[in-house]
Image 1 (cartoon, protein in one colour):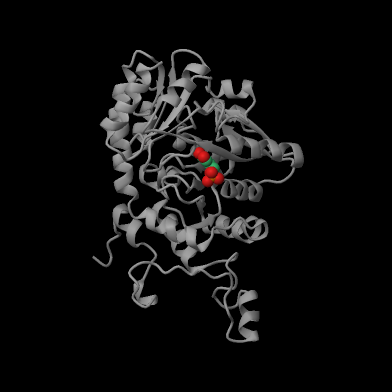
Image 2 (cartoon, rainbow, N blue to C red):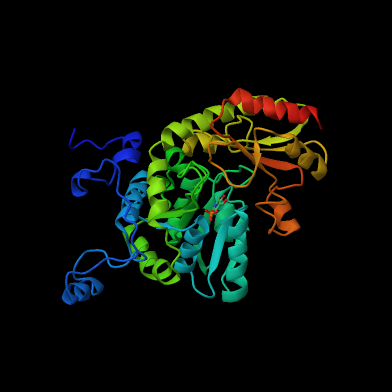
Length: 394
Ligand code: PLP
């Protein structure tokens, strides 16, 4: 048993924590401290000089946070990880660490609205340009990589249209050109997809979502090779300072324990609701990677364990019809975010992607009647009945 590597369902509960080092406490203790005392001035000097291991100040490292980081690195099959105060703190720390003025970032055709905002800011203020690519074939990708492309940035499934990108294909092309590939794996969690095993280099999570799972923390995670993680830790994390609080790390460790159980239930509920929505006469189009008619179904089968807990669908009618439908819902809450126990619905065109200009948003496939449903852990029949009565009223 000692030499055998435990399975994912065991690692989410145990990896990186040794009770014997913490007075036997079953649960990892919360080190709610901003700083650490040194035994002597000389010890402080040695720690600052990197000649002695040990904690200095919680922006530079904290024992509760470290357990979370080690566990997330193991779950994503990376060498090391860093935790941040939000998903966007993680995204910005990675992109700023990997680029410099004059560089180019190639992105999947569709990214989270604030990631889009960050890309625009980098372009306007620091001359770091970007392009969006369908990344649907090797050829498309090769044609869009420029001599100054510093990194490739991917969301898959793409928020909120559920298009997929073939991670292995992108990683193969990028490797030939020596370009690192970053994947925002928020929609899948490490339970459904591990981009590093497909050859990608860095994985980002808005840990606010499935990692937390209870809707009470905003946080981000970055996983990658040790050298890259050290570089981010020493530069953008340390000096920009978007670190996670020890209490939020503690809550994430608590949430993580049930990740596989929750994901199985999210995924199962979603397949039932897909069957209901797919045949509903008031639904114009439906976007779900588990749909065998989804153009990227084969990619889903190849790189995802299950199709996930999100469905987007457009309603027949106008923006007002979509908003009226949302206003009729009772159990399902109108809110951005995803991955919580509660089922949530949002209107991407006026909410998560409101900052994206109309033309760009339409290119991403987001129209005014598109809704995104984050399927929760309630009884799926109750979620279906809520949708049903709202459809009846429009
Ligand atoms: N990436 C994706 C795919 C998201 O959906 C979000 C937030 O909704 C983020 C990143 C940003 O995460 P946070 O809100 O934790 O900063």
